Length: 180
Image (cartoon, rainbow, N blue to C red; front, side, top):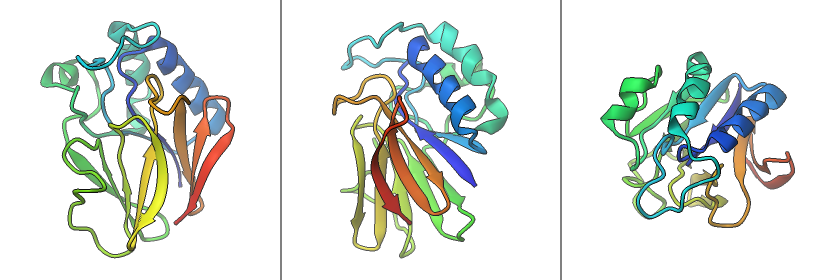
């Protein structure tokens, strides 16, 4: 299984187009979107080409491949225009290795407030707009960073394939790697 994991698009048509290019290039089986898809939020600057109405059909075109969780900037009105489920606060995927991947946005659960997880789990979240990969006890903690409003200076996403999580820049440069 190959996953493309992305977070915090915040309504940027520019970065949504980049996401579509990444899907074409990476050919993931599924996209795992970690919330904050359409609205920029009151604390963020407007991202490049902020245009949620343009983002909607781009994301809907991938609806059969998207698994998404709700971010703190996502609302019921967003679900009305998106053709894939968005309102779950978290989801758990079972990877081909048999290990669980707990996915959430990060405003309810985060590394300091983990949900009850079985030993050997992976926990992936967005929200803080900063790439991260490290073991915390027996849990692998991951963050793909942000596609549109990175707080660490690099627009990024993450790929999971063959038991390895790799954070990449939009140009495809691997900048972080964690084996699972």
